[in-house]
Length: 254
Image 1 (spheres, rainbow, N blue to C red):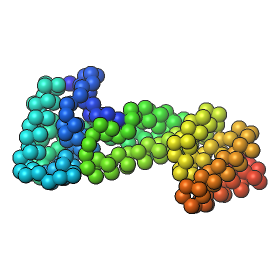
Image 2 (tube, one colour):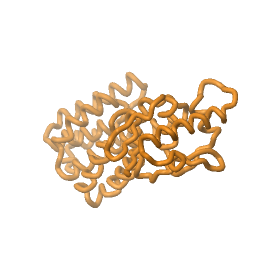
Image 3 (cartoon, rainbow, N blue to C red):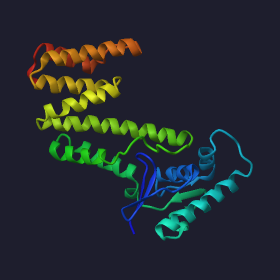
Image 4 (tube, one colour):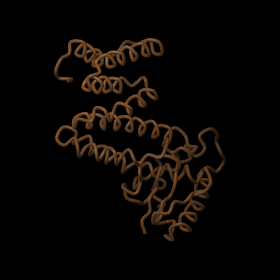
């Protein structure tokens, strides 16, 4: 029986291709926390801090154990497997006993890393892998989980990896002559993340290669004005160098 825990969006448990809601917010938080590192124990203290981040509770370990017992019953009712074989007790706390590829976040990271590693040698294959990785996303990480700093930090880390994968995908498409296909995608990404200079840089390259030098120059000035107005910064060295190269119509960007 194939079991998958998906956290790239609302948390869902997938069993034999059927999606299930695991129940309460606390159940989602507990399962989501363990799914961040499947096969790796998380201590009782860490779990307590995440499940009750804003208050101290009496008998915290007993409260955690009670939630684990109820979550195990829920998982057993869905999967037919004994809950103790899915959430195992360890000497320090608990772990989710599933392989890494049974969690979509792990699959996303490994697929995106594989694609990034192929950018220089096989950009077409890299693009296919990066597109596959990005298709795993259904929304903000752990969207319906109300955890503490560990959940928040994981969401930030995975969001950063998502942005890097978007950049890598555009790089791969530019390497195989897909300038026109990436321009709408980059405009959307810049609208959502204007602080990320690499997106503006990639858009300038795509526009310049498509024979639209004036639009490439305008993209630089739009980024420069936003950085100055919102952050009090000037464009970084890479973006400024590219701007100068385009003004000089240097062939490496043509």
